[in-house]
Image (cartoon, rainbow, N blue to C red; front, side):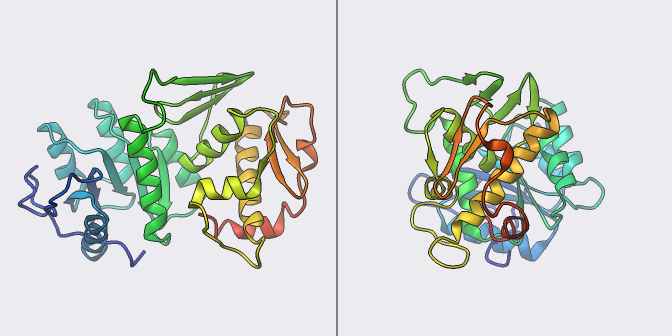
Length: 287
């Protein structure tokens, strides 16, 4: 992710040391923990240019000291591989010390086992370093807006949405099925939320894709290439639910149009056109 970077900060909360001073109120305050000096510098500068205030740490221990001394941020970007104390160890210590800040893992480790470990450990998302800066910015904005309450649910926001065996905890973006947690990424959670809050209503490929990337973004081959991208997301979401309940069948396909959240008696079991080989490959282009 060569597009992302930040000046190394001293471990104080003052913006005079390693944090970009801004004249307008920052979009959010970010702690970036990564032992790669070049990546850390590059990402922090890019985040600063986007309007974020950033404090950086080259190892996990100084970051933990910062939080122990009362340091405050809106979100933590955490590298997985670091000397002495790796990212998952940092996250575990944060949680054991009562530091409940939202965490996104940034890593070169793309295997699903690492993603599952990160989410099970309490992270909200897992982003490969090969992804572009706009993808990371979008993930951060969704999380920070959610923590701050957003702009659409200012009046008595509902913290839990229930639909049959599904429970969506909107305050921390957690999904449960039959009382068991489903380890969804933030993007996957938002796709499920989009469908589950509009049950039995058809949701188009384009609407799901726009939720992930923003309106007007295009990827894949040809004008409808984004459909394979969306199929890859849906396939992965179904797999995660079926790992908990093999009979899960609530994500139904409307061939040629999109998907709906049904009652489990629809056509989800037969999959949808193109789901499989091409869709699997499309995950590399997803998001």
